[in-house]
Image (cartoon, rainbow, N blue to C red; front, side, top):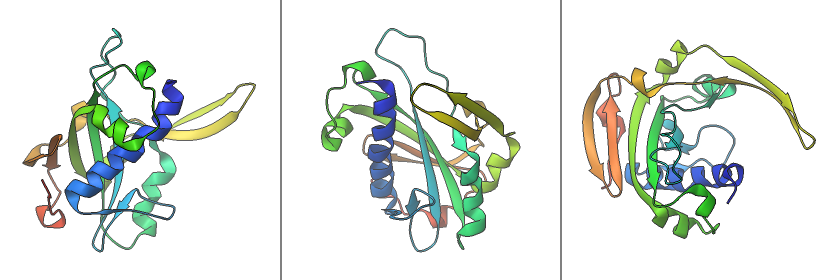
Length: 177
C-alpha cells in the first residue's frame, strides 16, 4: 500500500483503540477525535521501528494549527494523546483496507496523555506546495518526543501502554484494560 493511502486509514484504528481503552467515543462531528461527557482528546500516532530496512522514523507528530482552537470551541477540558506504534510488516506490504486486519498488524502501542496547553511551546510552520494533482497551504506544529512531560501514571492496556503526564488529572481517565 502506498504510504499516503495508509496514513489516511491508520488514524481510524488508533482512535478506535484509544476510545476503547479510555472508555470514550469517536466524535461524529468536526473537531477533536474523541469525546465523552467531561473531556475531549486529539489523537496522534506515529509509526516506529519500520520493517522496510529504513532508518528509525522520527519520534515526532504533526499538528494542524486549527486543532489548537478546539480548546476555545469545546466547553470542556482537552488533552493531547501522542503515541507510537509498531507494525508487523512494512507499510508497502499492507494489502488490506479492512480495519480489523489492520488492527491485527499492530504489534504494540505506547501513548502519552498531555495537557492541552503543552502544545503552545511549538512555533507554527507554514507549508505550501503544488503538484499536478493538488495544492496546499497549511500551518503545522511539530511536537517532539524529547519534550514530553514527566510521566505520573502508567497503565498496561491490551496491546500497549498509556501514560498520564505531569499536569493531567487522573480522575479524567477511566482505563479499560
